Length: 77
Image (cartoon, rainbow, N blue to C red; front, top):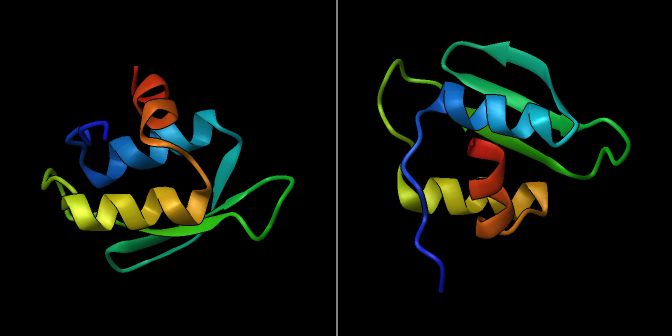
């Protein structure tokens, strides 16, 4: 199993935007990101300043976005 990288909410959103996701709405400290072509690929990303997203939450984001950990690591670069 590939180890999850550490990233804060803004970094996660930036990486997802590289994979053709966009922020549909942002209210309070959570952003809803949706894929441009497949609206069923979506995730809710917590944005709490510079705090890293917890591993379980990050795994749920990747599951909702239909991305593997390896693909996500490539997008973070």
